[in-house]
Image (cartoon, rainbow, N blue to C red):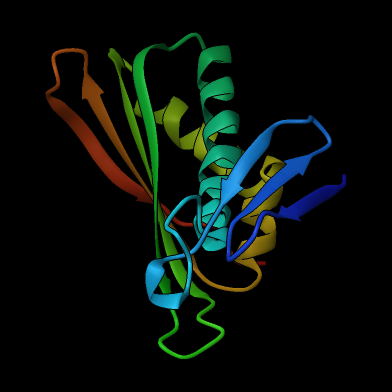
Length: 153
């Protein structure tokens, strides 16, 4: 896999991967940027969310669950001092549907966490990642919620 970042002046860049898609990169005005693109650390959090989101929805659908809405949120905490690395993260899986089985959601989260998601596997080696889930009925009522704990070892 290859990526290239091209400078456009100031702290404005575009990034492109093997697929050819382009993403704008920028910085906050407080550090000399024009606030005109994603921050690189934002993209790391989005990559984590996207990687596990694709795994989990794919597995849930294979389990024939009737999902009508789905969202994965990632919250990260960063160190106070430079280089301000991520020191922890929480991933929240919000699944909406009709009679979605908690066991199907838990199994999908487990498989993503321990087998399929390379972003989670890589970042999980560096800082702790908490995995929480929320299952809603199609009318918006919260049916159940919980946390999946990744087994050690």
